[in-house]
Image (cartoon, rainbow, N blue to C red; front, side, top):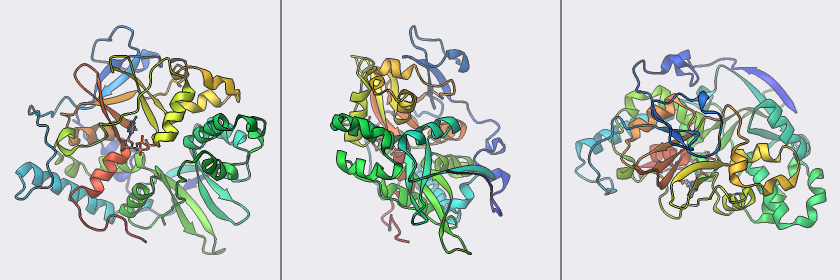
Length: 407
Ligand code: ATP
């Protein structure tokens, strides 16, 4: 394992463009509306709530934008029409500004001024890697092939989920699980029939637009920045950037453009609204994991029998369950599993189809959002907006150009 405190040697990033910098946040930005959601979760005292608690509902739900919500309830999802309406024109102007920004900024610019990078050797046992992630409070790490001195992919919660799925499909191999090194993860993917994620990378000084395109093309949710060491001529991993970090960077630095995105989630058809995969509180964690693997998704909304959203089970919720190494733990139900979430759990973010994209960007700027659950006035599930949905829209909507540059 290589753990190092890294400081960017030179940077074009000013304090104002640091996504972690509070200085970038608009002084009068509206605060997201916070409501209390149901289901097990951390103590509510950690969340301030201007709204009254709903009986039996303990999780923080965050509704980004009742403000700025237009009154119209149009159900149309128009293509880029000609001639464009003023609101369409403004929207395209905002998107174009954001795309230009992504083309002139590099992946290097997204990095904080100082950061820690933990790289795991591919020969390390999977079991040990889990402890390292937990002890360091991280949810992913780049892998290094020390035989070939090469970047070998990124370890994420999805890999542990695949391992569990493998255990379910091949229970006769359970005794070997402790002996699997990280390098066997690709074999595990093949054995359970999931599509391998391409091990793509980008050079840190390439345009950020390229990193985004590659992530969306390959379904990778994070991309390593790989440089070549001048002295040895070998690859060196500089850092890893995630969709979350990129969207935060956009939200913090392009407010002049995000404020032009006045169209609603419904109007632009943002997110997924059909064939939604959901679970219940009493379902086993194994069931939900199976759903995630077969549908290739990283979160499953948990609903009651009336389709009211109670919570969301996320891929990283698996980590506290498997940390004991006792496989029987996986038989527990979703309700129990969610009660194991740490104190730092940020809550579930919701929005409605009438919410505008500009207000979603305000929430992205202010909070730690990994997805939004789309609900109606009565908390019924309508859809899911993932970070990849937002990034895809920002990069490609109405653009007939070359989406995925090859270099
Ligand atoms: P991550 O959340 O891991 O960063 P991501 O942003 O791609 O990755 P996913 O949850 O993997 O998010 O979503 C992939 C696609 O599947 C998105 O288009 C999203 O709208 C859709 N999706 C997400 N959750 C569900 C679900 N429970 N049912 C159906 N579709 C979903």
